[in-house]
Structures are given as structure tokens and as C-alpha cells.
Length: 423
Image 1 (cartoon, rainbow, N blue to C red):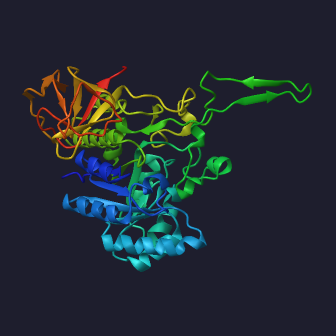
Image 2 (cartoon, rainbow, N blue to C red):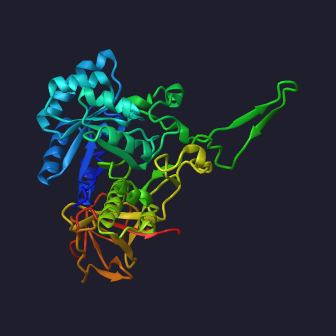
Image 3 (tube, one colour):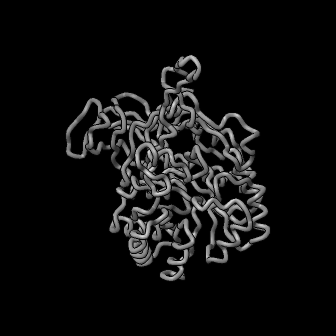
């Protein structure tokens, strides 16, 4: 019997990252242009016209795009919600991601033919809540990050027609997902309205006071401050085989609409690799862990899916807010595959590793501009000349230089140049 293939769902923070996610293996993407899409920063990257173009681009590839409308609206915003739904219907999005019963009802009235996916913001943890939302017309539940695989199996057993989606990678909330008020208190930016300032990542100075003597002692963790609320990032790549073996999950979701194009590419590429390997009985968790370490992260843990919180003591990064990945990104290749744009200093006669989508071939060459060769299963590129599209020559290119620089030979669209900086 053929195994039902799980969907890989990636973030689309802007049109470029949408293209990258789809190029690197995502089956579907999610994003939006409304200020109620729970990522106000990424909304600035999409307007109605560019999002419509993104929908058309996605559909031409035979893939899906889900419209995020998962904020919690005030009365004054209901008209905006209605207009956003109507515009997304005209664009022919493949599903709506929403959080509240009222928005579910409104979406059903305006677009009864378009599936509704319930956002993780609704915090579904059990089959009773899942059944209520199913009865309201929800086709897919994006489960709470705090749920276990065992509980998801029970939901699927009782509601087999309901699709289940889980987060497998990305930032974790210090509090119950989306319910934190720290950012709202400190900066007036409300998390479940898409403007979280990530205050839990900040370093804090703590004091202990003796009420009897009035003695005040400063508590210090290290020179970087005290990171008492800084959660590690979610990484379930090592458990993709266990998740898929359960047979109850329909979609694996990656968080990160505001993260870098490189993050978008590597996460999609790695989880596609893990999914493909599982179906071919070639699963190798060390391979996926190693590749994901090349992205910037706060340290990784497996969240709550396979272990309960009380069984672990490694869910927080108490040292720093951001830890560098094992690799530095130096350039990204444009969509044509003929030029690159610098993301760090690119120099002549230096070798850079080329990372491309799994299903794309890299051709080797050696000419006046430079060379591409293969060493130890890695493709390396180096330059003898760096010539911009406008004809100007450079000895080195810095990240602030916006000129397109010619490649020695064509590479797959959105390939990256990188170097290892630490083990």
C-alpha cells in the first residue's frame, strides 16, 4: 500500500522567500498582506498586488498558498477582516488560516468553498476542542505547540476526516503560544496581534533584596546579561520518521516568515530531504541535524511533541539570545542563475561552498571568470574576476554593494555561497 505523503509547509515572508521556499522543496507556503496576519513585520513585505502575483506564481508550480488571517480583531477591525477575506477569495488562495470562532463564521459566509485551517493560536490540545472547530467548518487543525504526538493520535482516531498540522521547526514562545503579555506590558506591542517584540529574548538584570537589612544584591549570569526567559528553538528533524510513522499528521510546518532567505532555503531543503529519505527507507537524523545547525539559532530542542516539559531541563538558552550557525552566508544567486548578490565580503581566489535545491544539477566549469568544481561531495566556486552586470570590475564585493555580479557559469536559481566558521 502506498504511503500518503505528508505536506511540507514553509513560511513566505515576502515574494523572494516564497520563491525560495517553493524552489527548495516546500509543497505549500503561508503568508498574507493583512495587518491581522500575525506578522506585522512581514506584512510590510507583501501588498495586495505582490501577494496576488505570489498566488499566481505558486499555482503555476502546482503548489498551494494559505492566507494568514489569524490575528484577534477588535470590533473596529471587523470591516478590515471582511475586506481581507473578499480580496483573498478573488486571488484564489487555497485556504484561510484563522484563530477565532467569529472569523471562522465570517469566512464560511463569504467563502464557503475555501478550506479553513485553525491557527495554532487557538491552542487545540484535545479531541473535544478539535470536534467543536470541526463542527464550525474547520478542515484542518494546526495543533498547539504544546501538544504530544500521543494526543494527536487520539484526535485523529476520533476525527479521522480532520487534517492535522504541526510545527516542526522555528522559534518557540516562552509562554503558552501567543498568550504572552510581556511584550504588551513593556512596549505596547501585542503578541497575538502580530507585533511581538520578543522581549523574552532580552537580557535582564535581576536583584535580590533582604527586606530586614535593606541589602540589595545584583544577580549576574554572565557578561551578556541574564536570559531567564529565552527559549531554545524547535527542531524536530530527528523525529520526522517517528512523526510520519504515526500516520496521523497531514502537514509539517516551519515557522519563520521574518527570518532570512538562507533560513527559508535550508529549512525547506532539509525537511524535504528528511521526508524523502523516510519514504525511501534512508532516514539519517545526523545529516539533518548537521545541516540545520548551519542556520542562526538559539540552540535547539524537540519541544513537547515527543517528551513532556517536566522530563526535560534543556529547553532554555540562558547564555545568549542568538547563537551563530556553523556557516556564514556570503552570497545569493538571482532567479536567472547568471548573477549573484553579496551578503558578506566575497573575494577573488577564495573558495565558497555552493548550496542549491536538492533536485537541481550543478554544472562544473573553469573559465576566465572563475570555476565551479566538486570536492568531497561539496560544490565549490571561486572567482578569478568579479564583473558586475554594468561592466565594472571588483577585487572584492561587500554586502552593501547591490550590483549583480556575473557567475563563471549558470547555477540553479537562489543558490547560496557559504563557508564553515565553526564546528
